[in-house]
Length: 112
Image (cartoon, rainbow, N blue to C red; front, top):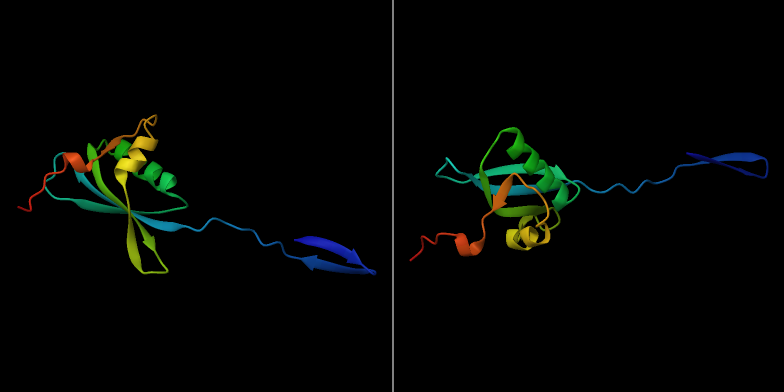
């Protein structure tokens, strides 16, 4: 709160702090010893922060994990928006992540 002195009166003005909005991210993944897929949800300010959280979980629990899809909840349209893991993995080649991204060319297609 700031004070301003004008004509002998003290005025208190609240500053609006623009905070980044928390958004919901969903990771669709497979553990190496699992047949099925699982989902894990995180509230984060950005995709990079959400990936950091997921990486922390994988490291902490010593999981051999492969992420198949990443989504962000669009609260205005009430739907999940998909991120392309291949695009993100090519941008973050220098990172030492404790999980890997499943790339579309490695995916098994069961629909014949």
